[in-house]
Length: 504
Image (cartoon, rainbow, N blue to C red; front, side, top):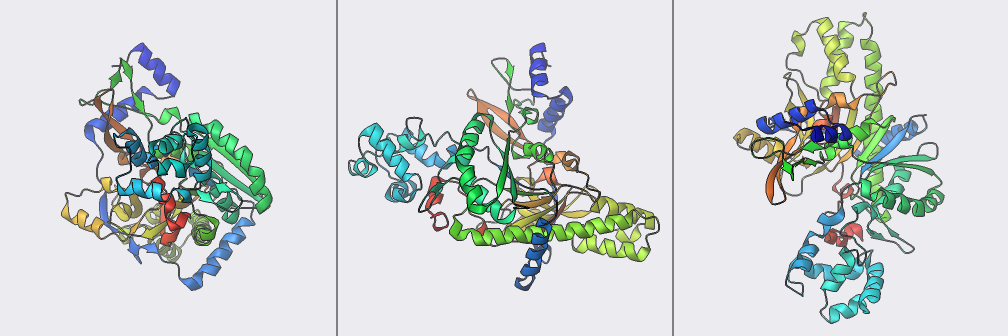
């Protein structure tokens, strides 16, 4: 199947022949849907923190910050901004010279509200000899878009989201990278130090480093902290092979075609961190300072919940090590596992003393993640569910709608009853009760990948995505869902999202 040239490429990427066979087999067999017990909801998988509990939880996090633990904020930031400008690219490539759609009209009508307006205006003056106002008056709309998106101007259509100007302040314009620096200083600073890790694409790393070097001194002085900012890229070894309609390797001009493995590939980058606690948040989910209070408070809340649960898990694991542990103590630990961690075992009472002790030790000695969940404001879909595992136990999982078999009426009904969705707001415990780092790759469910149809050189191909970072890649973690306010979720998916009140 593979030529000597293929083998050289595989060796260079660090991909084994067995991995290729495994991926091709996945194309042939597909991935199974996950069994759902129910959607997670308040008092049934989702914890609602009461107002009178918040202060105590915040204090637990502040106390943890005084320890010698290492805390890192992990930000996936490799995504290009091109999708943000899909509508503007379509306008630029169309035969129309004036805006006609609601999206286009809004963009031009409110263009002065964008943080990049002043810089774009200067580019228009330089390249076209006219201000944006004059170009609009003369009904010359396309030069404005061209100066925004192409390398003739700001080149925003080819830059990563993290480097675009999102927010305006009296003395500065901030990018998402800068907003993440500010956020981290407000909830993840320990002993005056803030650790942040951005995953970026290889071609954009130099730009990120340049922007950081121009930025970091300002925020270190403002918040009286020192930042340790690191970058990594998605590993070539996590690329997946593309397949043709016969589930054989797809070739273009005779060469094997590989595709990035999706955000699930970042479990490798996360696994490389030597840290105790890691916050995870997407690059585009940021707000200006005027709206940061809620975000900062609830980041501390989910972190406080985590360290409280971690402390209890560690204490119970020390108990479970003892041969002399009593049945009464096992019962208490089992209740904690069932009620606080939402790990349900239908035949728990049938287990012998030794079987129960072994089961509880395995269930507690795993990475922990606390995931913020927000209430649905649109159509129900993927989000927090209680799912049935291969061993018959039930545990909380974050599912995509594609992992749910909508042809089964009962499962479709459970999805339609889901009350919350996943904003990618996680805090993770990465070490065990002895202080040893977990190998996160041991907790991935390989049967939770995704297959999609793409094209190359005019031919259709099948693409394989690895189990998602917060989906199957964390399947065997202890997972706790906590309700957080909707105002903590403000992603920027299109350029016009920057016109929403939350980003002004």
